[in-house]
Amino acid sequence: MRHLLALILALFSLPATAQQVGTLIAADPVADPPVAMHAWRIRYWTSGGDGTVREATGMVVAPSQAAPTASRRVIAWTHGAWGVAERCAPSLSASFFAASAGVEPSVREGYVVVAPDYIGLGSPTMHPFLVGEDTARSVLDAVRAAQGIAGAGAGKRFAVWGESQGGHAALWTATRAGAYAPDLTLVGAAAAAPPTDLAANLRSGSDKNARALLLSFALHSWSSLYGFSLDPIANRTNQGIIHRLAENNCVTLGKKPKLGTILGIVTVARATRNKDIGRIEPWASWVRTNSVDPARVPGPLLIAQGDKDTIVAPAITRAFATGLCRNRTRLKWIDMRGTDHADSARDSAAETLAWIGDRFAGAPPPDDCGKF
Image (cartoon, rainbow, N blue to C red; front, side, top):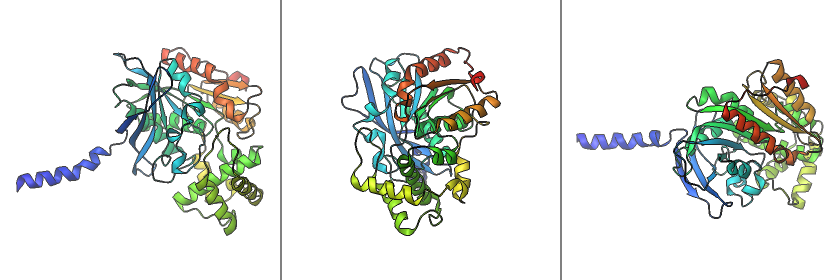
C-alpha cells in the first residue's frame, strides 16, 4: 500500500516538474540549414504575465563545429511582426533564415542564436501581440531552454537583438531580465525600429494600410485574451473584418496580399481613421502598460532607426532615445539614411554585431546622448 501511495504521489508530481519554465521539451534538428550551421526547432516551457505555464516554440541555430569546452556566447534574436495566428510562427516558415536578418550573420561570428516565436505563434493559444511581460518571459525562457541542447553549447551570457515588434521585445527583455531570470547575464540590448510608445506608434506611422493591419492584430489579440470590447472602435460588421484579417493573414515579405486582404485592410483603415485606442478605455490603459518606459530599461542599449520608416515613425523613436538619455542610460544610436522599416535590422547588422561583440568583451559602452 505504501508503495502504491508513493507511486501515485510521484505521478501527480510529474507535471509540476516537467513544466518548469525555461525547460527544454524537445529539440528537433532542421534539415538543410545554411552551410556550416546546425539548427533545431525547439519546444520549451514559459509562462504568461499571469503566471500560467505555457508551451512555446522557436529556433536555435549554432555553428556546425563541435561545441567548445567553454560555453558559446548567445544572441536572442527577437523577430518582427509575422502575425498573431498560430501558423505565423517564424520557426514554421520556409523563409525563416531569409526573413530573419540577425540570424545568419550572428552564427557566422560564432554565436548561438536563440530565436523564440513568442507565446501563441506555433502553439495553440492566442499570441499576446506587443504584450511586454509575456514576450520578455518567452525570450528569457528560450535562452534558458537552449542550454539543454548539447550540440549548441549555449551559455548563460547573452545579448538580445530585435527588429520592429522584436525591438519592443528586446527592450522589454532588458527591462525584465534581472528580476525574471537572475540566472542569466544580459550584456546588452539592441533594437532596430522598435515600437516604444504604442499609442503614438499606432497613430503616427505614415503607411495607413500597414497601420490598419497592425491595429487589427492588436485589437484581435487583446480582445480575445482580455475581453476588451471592440464596440467603441468599430461596428459589428467591421469587427468581423478585423478578426478575420488577424486570423487569416501572416506577414510575408516579397508576396503581394490577396484581394480579400487588401479590401479588408482598406475597410479597417477607413473604419478606424478617427479612432485612437490611446484615448479609449480599457485599450488606453493597456497600451500604456505595454509601452516601453525609458526610465525602466537598463543599459547598455543600441537603437537603430531609418529615416524612411513609414511604420515606426522616426520622431517617436528619437523621443524615446531622448528619454533614455535623460535617465543617463548608455546609448549607441544608429541613424540610417534612406532605410525603410523592412531593412532596419539588415542595414544596421554589421554595426550592431560589432557593438554586441564589444559588450561580451567588456569594453566600455559608447554613449551617443550628445546627439539628442
